[in-house]
Amino acid sequence: MGKSPASTYLDKTKNSVDEVRQKLKLKQIEARNNFKTSFPKANQLLLDKGMDLEKVRDYSGKLLATTLLTGSLLLAGPTGAKPLPSPIEIQEKINKDTKDNGVPVQKRLIEALRDVVPERARPLSREEEKLLEQTFENTMGVKARATLEGEHLNTTYGYIGAEQHLRRYPGDVNENHNTGSQTVLKEGMAPGLGAWGYFAPSKEKLTPELVETEKWYAVVQTLYLKDWARRQPHLRNWYKYRKVLIVNTLNGNAVVAAIADSGPAAWTGKHFGGSPEVMEYLGGPRYKKGPVILFFVDDPDNKVSLGPVEYNKIDANSLVEVTNI
Amino acid sequence: MSQIFWDQYLDLDDINREIIQISSSTDERDELSQIVDGIIHHRLMSCILGNLEEADHEEFLLMFAKAPHDQNLTEFLKDRIKSDFVQLIKLEVEKIRQEILSFLHLS
Image 1 (cartoon, rainbow over the protein chains, first blue to last red):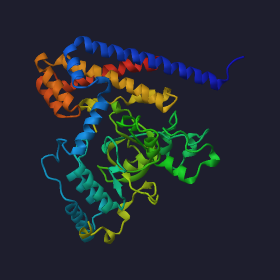
Image 2 (cartoon, rainbow over the protein chains, first blue to last red):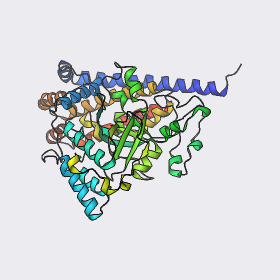
Image 3 (cartoon, rainbow over the protein chains, first blue to last red):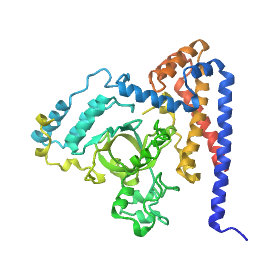
Image 4 (cartoon, rainbow over the protein chains, first blue to last red):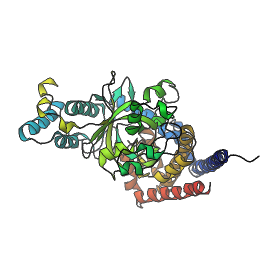
């Protein structure tokens, strides 16, 4: 008896993956052997230092975690030589221009970010992160933290890239994600499921909250967390739908999103991903990649809504007074 | 963040898309991504050492082992390698891209 079209497709996919895996592994062995044969002394020196090139990302991640923890990271870049402004200085500047001259908060925030955020994405020091946490809380009213409950991503400042829609339940199709924006539909549907599978077991069980979760979802590199494998299932549960504040450092647009997938691969030149809706809000219909700050939202009572943070609508008189910082 | 200083020259999004397309689970996707990562690191290190004077190998490797993310490594290599270091890396990345894409397209 012949196979059903579905099982034929699955078999073909499986064969393809196995074939690709085998070829990639052979390529990997070839690259490793060529390195060892051509540069035996270099290979030995790295091994003596405890570094296996295959696992250099783990090695680097551990080093970075230690240096960030002890504050001993040497930071090169535009803010390296110049002392950081204090949160009070930043807030005074934002308040003054906004209240006295009617300048939108967002415009002032972008200028303030230029004094704090380095031009090229790199790990932020704890001092820089704390300054940004306070600035975001004071201007946007969102309590966001680089480290929450002891968890910290490998980076909080990096490039975000466009992701596709995720299948929310079995049988979900791209057209069901129509929110009136052609750009958002154009991204299409991801071929696989997100890291936490379907959002709901069926269309009937898809709640409005889960619709919002997929609509405003973010992707972070949990696969490169140094303790990811060791601290299961705690980390997997902790990151599932965890709210994050994403701020476009070039235009100040901000959105609260929920983590719903892992990635992107480090060799894509990106560090985070955003749903079509997240990307459209952060940078417009043609926005595919750009620098952002990404912090966890401290929201134990689940009061912060997913979606755009429209802080320009905040009444200037309600901005935090510098004396309250 | 760049965990490795050469990350800034990696932009292999098309390979990532192909891997996502063929993977049936996140675990499978991550596994293939990690293999690609291993290929890249060995190839780029070979490319660098192959173009760097042997007398400079130890100094570079000690710097690399101390802080693989350090952007000063780029400056060191720009200074010590006679040819255009950035161009060399970009060419090697492009070769890796073509080779891996050929597997993915043949599958």
